[in-house]
Length: 135
Image (tube, rainbow, N blue to C red; front, side, top):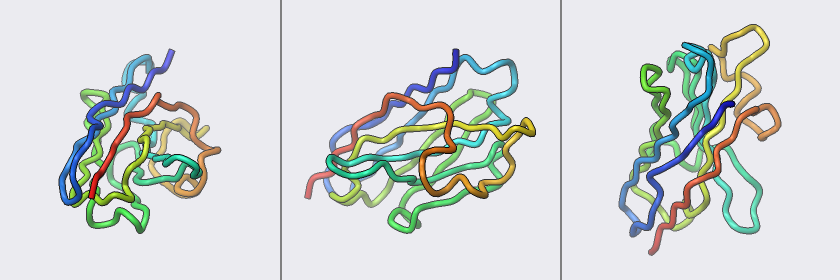
């Protein structure tokens, strides 16, 4: 059974940094490296939105305009772990952050086309980690 477990959230002041991690387990041997991974966030009263995405091998990344230049998504396929480095945090970054995984029917995910808007294409989700940024 696939599990995604986020960690690294917390409370910081504006301008600070946090590094989120998402540990994946339950993937058949090697196949974690064939999944696209993404970070989403959801603030109270708002819809869940995509923040950053990365292809299976890490060659392609995509960022929401609101975090571009401040957040960096990376992955370590040897450790089955996804990361989100968040710098220059703003109060509007306050939200529950979720990681998600999906693999295309062809058996790999080298392109992020069609995955960067909406949540419906993503198959596996973590439980989330809270990030709170105070002004």
